[in-house]
Amino acid sequence: MPDTTSERAAAVKAALRTQSIELPSWAFGNSGTRFKVFAQPGVPRTPEEKIEDAAQVHRYTGIAPSVALHIPWDEVDDYAALAAHAASAGVRIGTINANVFQDDDYRLGSVTNPDPRVRRKAVDHLLECVDVMDATGSRDLKLWFADGTNYPGQDDIAARQDRLADALDEVYARLAPHQRMVLEYKLFEPAFYTTDVPDWGTAYAHCLRLGERAKVVVDTGHHAPGTNIEFIVAFLLRAGKLGAFDFNSRFYADDDLMAGAADPFQLFRIMHEVVRGGAFPEGPGPDGSPGAGVCFMLDQCHNIEPKIPGQIRSVLNVQEATAKALLVDAAALAKAQAAGDVLGANSVLMDAYNTDVRPLLAELRAEDGLDPDPMAAYARSGYGERIAAERVGGAQAGWGA
Ligand code: PSV
Ligand code: MN
Ligand code: MN
Image 1 (tube, rainbow, N blue to C red):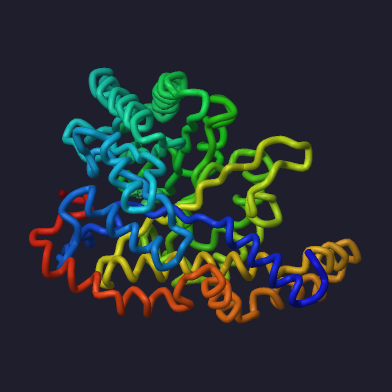
Image 2 (tube, helix red, strand yellow; image 1 turned 180 degrees about the vertical axis):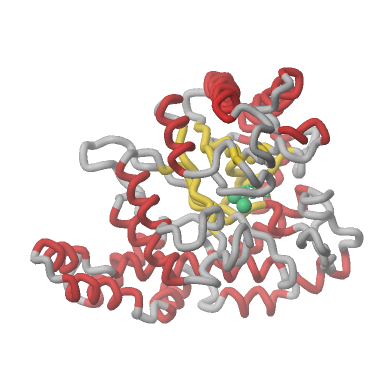
């Protein structure tokens, strides 16, 4: 990193210009808890409208060029046409998220279900998702399984791992050479006694066995309280096995609140490891190997706040944390660490975190022809009022649909 302040700012801006945050289509639909879904005016009625709303986030932030789909929540007859629709809105379709958790057949699990018929049905859905990827040009298939058990003795824990491995093998074999499988773990819920992919270690072990194009997804809401997520990030990056993030905030469990809202310091610490580990800005590894190719995605829903501004705020929170991480004086940090200077090293990190990067980001946007204040620019645009007037009967995001 260059020495003078202005050179440093220019280098940070250059790196930030390469940033992209993927948005979840389901963030734009109505959502809630098991207690109540609060319908909002103007929410999308179709996958096409979700993509149009996502395009608004990209329009005002400049760094949200892709939208992840969840199948079948975003089921359409013609995925190539949906990709063309996305392109005409100024974005593209990103990760394809499979859904093997919303069918009566999956009461005892999907790919780990004791019944081979149900396992076949689940794997067939995953294979269909790869067909969708072929049509949309997507690189990543994201797998999250609600599978697990509620009671001791309910099923054979190790046998369920065998069934999981068989399913992953079959889907991995179907991927084209440019496609990847990213496996997401989650501590608990909806299963409460055992979960078949409960932690990064389980996901890592399966991905390691599968091969180069199987990587782990870190959903920031999927850990026990107090878990050091940045350690997991550093470990997976070092092992070449970090595939993607599902960013969101949590106070208790899988809250899916706006990224950077509950604990912006944690988001900074994660992004520091991402920068330190060479995953952003993306570049070849020290040995010339291809870059990590990490997909930085949001996985959130906006139950009580308006959805498009909620997504804009989240994208800006990730951008701010990234800017701060880029400001860490790596040379000074390494020097303090090598000298065993505990307080010095800590203060290098805190200096970056305590920097107000908002003026730098406003300057960056102005230089790139964007409004320096994306939240205000969207509010002024009238888009929210227009969709509220034009759209009647918005779709639910997916849960409980
Ligand atoms: C599960 O809690 C999860 O984080 C997975 O990524 C799902 O696909 C997503 O939420 C949407 O419900
Ligand atoms: Mn997730
Ligand atoms: Mn989740």
